[in-house]
Image (tube, rainbow, N blue to C red; front, side):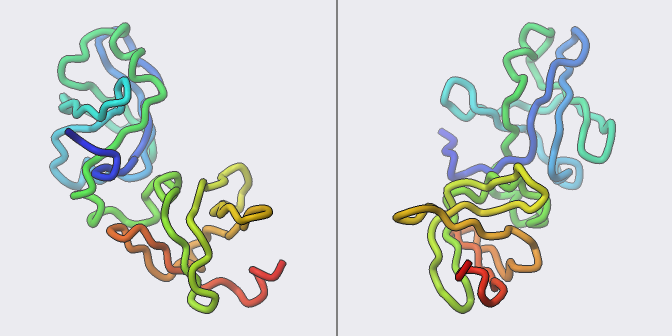
Length: 172
C-alpha cells in the first residue's frame, strides 16, 4: 500500500476535456516528461492509487492534457477533477526544489542558521505575492518568507528546511 510519506505532489487535475476520458491538468514540474514515469498517483476515497499514463501532451508551460489507462469517458474523468497528482519520492531527487508544490513543505521543520529551530510549518500561505511559511506559536504564529534567497538547504528525508533569515526579521 502507498503511504502519503512515499509521495510528493506535482500538479492537479483541472477538469475533463472532451468525452473520451481525456483531462486537463496543471503541473509544477515536467519530471514525468524528462524521466520514464509510467503512472501518476491519486488519492481516491482516502487511498493512494496508481493510474498508468496512456498518453499526455502539453498545452502550455504548466498545463497539458492527459489520458489514464482505463478511464474512458467523461463520467469517469469527473471523479478526478480537482485531485492532486502525486509521484513516488524516488523521482524527488531529479526535481528542482523550485518545481515542487509549496504545500508539500507543510510538516517540515524550519531551522535558521542563527536562531536554530523555529518550529514546524503548519501551512504555506500563498494568498499574497510573498509566499510565507506559517509556524504556530503559543500565542500567535510566525510568518516566515519562503523566498529562495533565504533557503540554504532542504533535507527531504529528515523533512527540514535550513534558512538564513535577515537579521531582525524574527524580532518584528
